[in-house]
Image 1: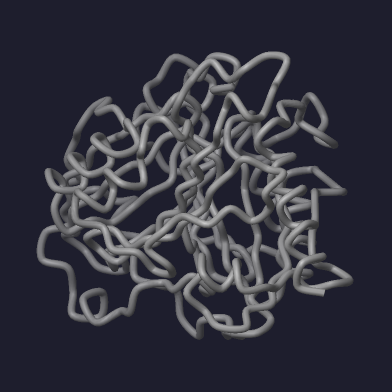
Image 2: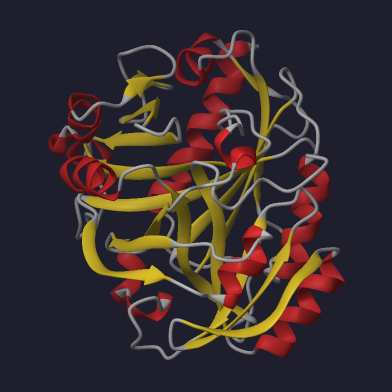
Length: 348
């Protein structure tokens, strides 16, 4: 039974390695892509060095939040100050945020675990020859499961590992043996961000929400009938006897993964995770129309947090999904540094 579920998972994941088509989404979808994933860090320089040296994130620009109405509203208090650095891969990007004097609540907030709840990890898919995982550990990251990478199925030349960075945020690394894949057209790039993962206490609720929000009625799923399990999964996650269920949405340039650990249940947070708490703190979507994005958020069952405000040379509004994850909806010019439209061929 374990072997069968591992085969199912490995085949599903491998499909994500080679899939370039945006299945099921209309050409005129309201959400056009992902502008960035936000991440609160304790030290900008340390995080920049780690992610540049291991997964080749490139420094795009830096800025400061000072007297920002948007950031004050999201943090829940006035005078929030932060230094930021936008870091870019070939298909997506992260916005590192180092906050000045975070409040006690943020400092005492526990890291998001592999099983959540919340924005659990960002996955980097790289050519095996880059040895990105080894460089990540050499830079100060620590393994979560086994130190050695795990190949789920010998027929699929992909190797997986989870690790904690300096701030205890979870990172997934996928090493792909490109030559062994025998693709008709090999990838143009050795590094890319594969997905951002939301770990949820209720995958059906999350899938229903994002199906409406992203206008993708039939996402890829695995583990609905037979929960995915096995020793190899345990070695990756560090959680014994894990049983999981997964779904994936392709949002132009970045995949959104939904995962539920049925074996290690979590509950929906009573209150939102503080903006300044270390780890991933938001996903900002690129939208064609802010009014339409607001409508889809509410229609999907989300909660509006902040009405439209100016930010980064464009306009943005914020909401939360049913698990309380902070989502931004930004309309910005296509040539702006933050825009998801900057990525040629979506990073394939």
